[in-house]
Length: 611
Image (cartoon, rainbow, N blue to C red; front, side):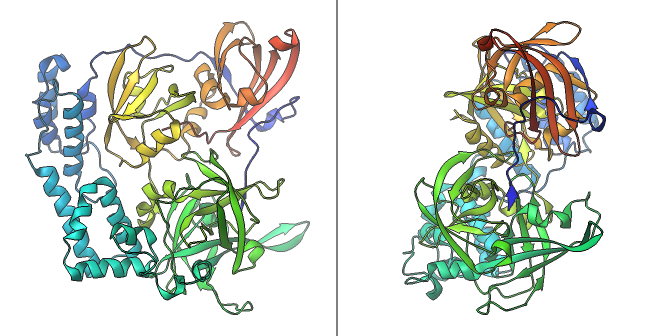
């Protein structure tokens, strides 16, 4: 179990400046001017497809969409043998880069019919043919049984999610194929897949999940994850250095879900010590010393997840139920190995929803006995549906613990089966919810949003025509896309203009702010995303600012700062190794008659406002 770190440090300054980098304050810049018509050529210039095909697409653009069309087209044709960008194949609905380009162009044609007269490379009926082809290919793979069953079930559910019309095809499946799919669901204990197939869940559960043994079935799938990191020296004594966690089998071929922080030493290039990974499966004997070597298949630092593989027939298998939604007050079980005590089952309730402790998405607060060693274990309903993964707790507060909901794992679950880290798409923009509005607060200088007409203060109203009012909803829509996809953001600019802005999604850096903060300067534009406040630079030898807005639930609000307070920035500190940014200020609070007060605000740079 990892400890939720405090995000606010208040009081008199007591940091050792010699251990930190200090920075000079510089004003942020706003960038270029607005365009009422987005420059579509920028988007086409980055589509991951051969350039000769981009040329065909550009040929359909109206001349007025950008003035140098002929020159640009000539340059494109001259480089027709090259490819501008390669993308990681989608694990959602595998297809070629060519198919991805057709999807992108079709989306642009939908929103910009006067600019993109038709969808190049796409014939009438192509979309239906591609869906049919993907459906038939997936059914054939299920019949061949060459892939991990959990991966097949996931891609089946993803295809149904994207194309609800395919539910009718299930009813038309030959009996042999449908029996194989039902058998797949039974092997995986997959309630969700059984329901998609139109089967009665109770009648089709394996014996291990009937009667009152549903919790026992999940417990049989749980494992202890053990990482041997050799010895550490404390006070001249050698002490075994071990990391304990939990996990659970999600596939009969030996795939196990756990937390990234449990196995981080296996894949972190900065770790230079010993690291040996084992798991201990369920055993009827509490004295069993049976351990099995394991390896890491895929991992996700952002959602703190990892997929392991062992060469073992699992004593039990369960599936994450991606359709399950937590409800406050709902009873939940957790299975795991607190303190290394395997086969432990605990009971509690869902306390609260929507806690934002990770860089993307939301986690669920649970009130149940969770201790070090529970990390990575399943949290599940009394019915046996696995609804999430335990990942953290606050050591100082008993019963305050957290789980990653299965609905947030759904978009990246398939990526865990590919070797290496999960790669997220992003637009490179930070936003803040203000009531029912979602307002842009920062544009990352190296992200795709830096090259398009977006400004802090603009309001995001939709994505691909879907109305958006909250940051988690927008983040979810983004991570269900692939790197290389285009999304169209509905924007209401600060001057009231309604725009549709296409954004090319690129690969998200693991820690977006780390690259920005490595420069030896401080930008005024960092105040909103890092410290939750808008400020106006008042100038002066020591940079002085007036607070123009304090964001709800932000760091400034937690420190008691309010609009019209003024402060001098005495020091800016970036502790790179600890991933912490801090400001040391002399603040004049309006509510305290503008008396001087020393204050320090510190935040981890893994902020959760980017999408």
